[in-house]
Every structure is written in C-alpha cells, then in structure tokens.
Length: 349
Ligand code: UT7
Image (cartoon, rainbow, N blue to C red; front, side, top):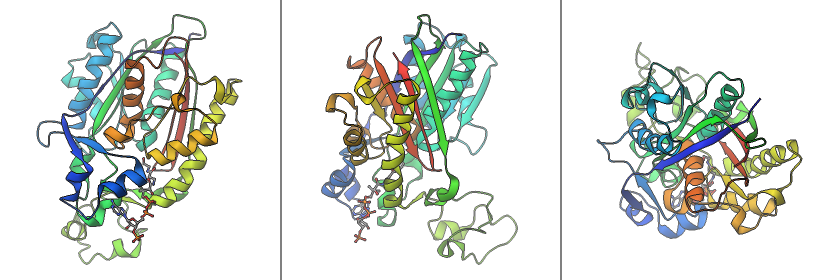
C-alpha cells in the first residue's frame, strides 16, 4: 500500500502588517513584553471586509493545487481546519468547494485548534492509504483578527494571534518509503476550559466560572448570545497562558519522540522540525530538550504570530520555498493547543 505524500504546498498571508507598536494604540502592552515573552514582532491581519478564513484558504489552495500539477477539478476530497469559520455553520470546506468551482466532492471541517492541521493531514493520509481518494486538499486557515478583544482586558490573548492560511495537496507517493510515515494524535479534555471560547455555545452556562455565570437574563433564546455576554466581553477567547505553556513543553517533545521511536529514528535524523508556532520560547524549549541545532527547527512566529491551524502549513511552505527541505529529508510536524489536543506527523519528503 503506497504512503501519501505532499505533492503541492502553498500559503497566503494578508498584506496588512500589524506590529507590536500598532497594538500599543489599543491596549496597555509594549513591544518589549511581547517580544520577550513570545518572540513575536508583527503579525498579519486580514482585510476586515474583503477577506475571510475561506478566501485566504482559497488563495493558499490555488498555489498548492498548481504546484501539485493538477486543477481544482482533480481534487476529490477537502479537509478544512479552522477555529475562525466564516459561519457557525456550514463549515469553510463547502465554501471553498463553491469558491473554487470544484466537483460535488466531500468536504470535511476539522475543529482541533492548534493541532487542526496535523489532525486534518492524518485523516487525509488514511483516505489516501486506503485507496479511497487520490487528490486531497488539506487547508488550515484562520482570521483571528475579527474576534479578539483589543482592549487591555484581552491583551494576553490578542497579542499572540495572527491571520493566514496554508494548504497542501496529498497524493499517493510514487516512490517506496516516501511520504507520511506515521501520524500520532492525542487529547486530554480535563482542562478544556483553560484555553477556550465559551460563547456562543450550548453549555447554557452551567459549568462556567462564577464570573462568567452571573447572567441576569436567562430568558429563552438569551443563553446562546445575550446582551450580557456582550457587556461582559464573554464572546472572546480565554486563556490561562502559563498553564498552557507548562503542558505544551511536556507534550511537544513527547509526541515528537513518539513519532521518531515508532519509525526507529532519533532527533539527530531530523532534517527539519516544524513546530506549531505558539510561542518562540516553547519552540526553543523543545529544541533544547531534543538537542536539536538551530537549522533543524523552523520558526516564523516573529513575522506572523500564532495562526493556529495555519501555522504549520505556512511554516512548512516557507521552509520548503527557502530550500531547507528537499526530497528524501526527514521532516516532523508537531502541534499542541486548546483541548488539549496534540499531534505529530513524520514525513520522508
Ligand atoms: O497556540 C495556542 C496555545 N497557546 C499557547 O501555547 C500559549 C502558551 N502560553 C504563553 O505563550 C504565555 O503564557 C503568554 C505569552 C500567553 C503569557 O506569557 P507569560 O510569561 O506566561 O505571562 P503571564 O500570563 O504570566 O503574565 C505576566 C504579566 C501579568 O501581569 P502581572 O499579573 O504580573 O502584573 C499579565 O497581566 O504580564 C501581564 N500581561 C501583559 N503585559 C503586557 C499579559 N499580557 C500582556 C501583554 N502586554 N500583552
């Protein structure tokens, strides 16, 4: 049974650069704090009205499809990973299918936050290996800038995130031993609420921390979205950053080691580790822990911030475009984020 390989890859980031200094206009923060704690210098923000998560995904997909030497009509399945969908439903997969005038193929949306792209890749890999599909488009795209709290209250979250999209086309590999060697998926829902956007949702406020649960207007229809939620800024993401950080620095090395061990390989065999771009300090910690040298780890969070499901395909594409990944190289993708969910994929390029 052939492995699946990445036959084409592309990324798209909006033209609008938003620096740390720009954020100072909206909230009590500063360039020094952001760079020291996260490594981020700037990020891109989508055109507020002209671009959506889907349109950015389409731009990345066009490049990936062209580089794979096929057309949108050859795609036989779409997997779209995002936490910033254009609509609550339907998902971005069908919107991309429409925008790219594809055939009436299957379209699946994946909601796995920072590990969304690796999860999506893993699902696509299984469909290729089983022989069910021949050309799968996997997209990770996020328009975070539309849903962040740009007041000082939301600064621990808002300064981190950026917008962008990445896409790959997966096909059966022609060469023996080439392609995705294995994928490894994990979750632990115990701490689901420490990095989460609670509203709008169907939880009806039962489990929320007290400060979020003090609704005075529990009229029918007002638990999903209410004026109180808006007044209390409860429609934004929440994060206990230090708690996420502590878990991330354990789970990243664990899931990378798992992938290497499964294939009888060691960190020294890696040409390139592409970690999800959550925080430069996390990536540096992982690098040290695995004793990788600087040119074995690719980081671009400095330019783009954390683009959640898009961060890995954007970084992978940049590294490949810069000639840092060549045929035969061993590449590891690894992600950790909200859920918690974490995942890795080991690829013989
Ligand atoms: O990809 C999704 C997964 N997410 C992650 O992996 C995030 C992991 N966590 C982190 O990256 C870090 O925890 C952060 C970058 C979010 C925060 O860095 P930290 O070193 O953990 O800072 P902290 O949250 O402990 O906050 C330290 C101080 C606090 O002030 P006090 O209480 O010490 O007076 C915060 O209020 O920094 C303050 N602070 C800020 N100050 C300036 C928080 N955000 C900001 C800000 N600008 N943007």
